[in-house]
Amino acid sequence: MASGSGRAGGYGFSRGRASSFGGSMFGSVVLGPMCPPGGIHQVTINKSLLAPLSVELDPKIQKVCAQEREQIKALNNKFASFIDKVRFLEQQNQVLGTKWELLQQQDLNNCKNNLEPIFEGYISNLRKQLETLSGDRVRLDSELRSMRDVVEDYKKRYEEEINKRTTAENEFVVLKKDVDAAYMSKVELQAKVDALEREIKFFTCLYEGEIAQMQSHISDTSVILSMDNNRNLDLNSIIAEVRAQYEDIALKSKAEAEALYQTKFQELQLVAGRHGDDLKHTKNEISELTRLIQRLRSEIESVKKQCSNLETAITDAEQRGHCALKDAQAKLDELEAALLQAKEELARMMCEYQELMSTKLALDIEIATYRKLLEGEECRMSGEYTNSVSISVISSSTAGTAGTGAGFGYSGSGTYGYRPSSIGGGYGFLLGGCVTGSGNCSPRGEAKSRLGSTSEIKDLPGKTPALSSPTKKTPR
Image (tube, rainbow, N blue to C red; front, side, top):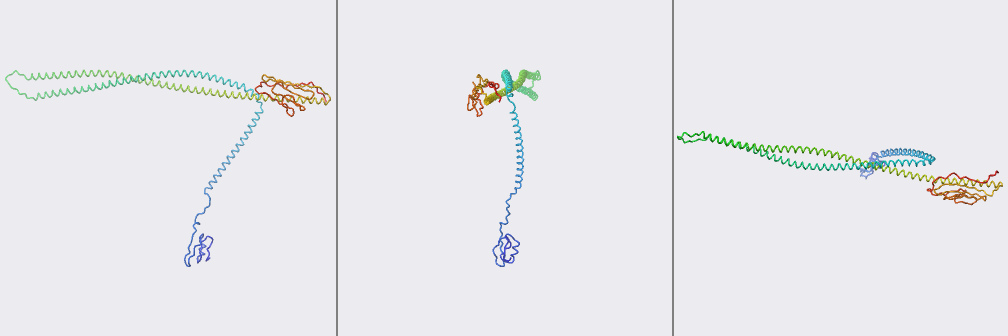
């Protein structure tokens, strides 16, 4: 292919010798412009083909699919568990339905009638508990008052002890001031004693120095005597006299200083002993007051603990009493509500029973009426005709203060009637389109009763009234 471009998408050479080689080796190259003969052809590359291919696939798609499968499995398991629960609940519903039907089929009249003594016994028991709780409350109130009196007594004693403590502390402060003053005076006196001792030592040293100086002066003094012929002058005696005089003066001064020192020292010892005794007495009083304060503190702590214990016991007793009263009141309210509900249920059942008995009475009367009609038809068809047939139905029941009576009449003309005398309702029977009585009649002639209010029902009606007829049944 000298002038071709090679394969689709490959390099192309317009002309020349190497066109077939270029078409077979390179791919995805667009044909470039033509070069002059004998030169190198220009090659153009499509860079868009060098970009990686976009597969449009998420690398996390496998993980997402696995998670979705796990979620579907978990949801399937939950759905299966829900189905099992639904089946179990349906079974329980069926079991409860059967139990409910069995309970409805049972005769609950005796149970409901027997509930009243049970409630009365329970109410009496609760009243006894209430009385015991009232007694406990009175007892706890008395104990509370006594405990409050004890607490007030302890408070008074505590206040008295606090007052005593304050007075003792004040006395202690005064004594401490006195002790401090005595100690300061003792320190001052001790300082004076030390000063006097130092002064005595100083005067002693001064006296000894003066004596030594005097002796040295006397020893160093050169005496120039004018010798005369008088042989009676004795210098040794004169020196001895002077020495004796100075020694007497020194001894007197020393004795006076020692006497003054002894008197001052004795006075200071007496004052120090007196202050020492006062200090010991004060220390003893302070120790006794400290012991008394500690004892009072311990008693106060014990009294506080007792007061706190009594207050907690009182609060606990009050809470228990309130809780017991609330519980008893709640139980009493529940029992009263249950008793009221039972009375309402009993009244409703009595009303239903009265309606059923009235319906039964009407049906019995209707049956007797139809029987008498059939007997009358049989007699008429057989040729025996009676002028009058009377059927009387007498029923009596007690409804509060009003009595009830019922009468049933039958005549030969084919008209029948039933009329109660004094109850708020009645029965009616129709025959041949004629209705007599004060009740409502159905198309079959069945009578329906209109009863009074349920509050007027006191006793149950009696048995089905007796039927009497003077007619005779003739054989066919």
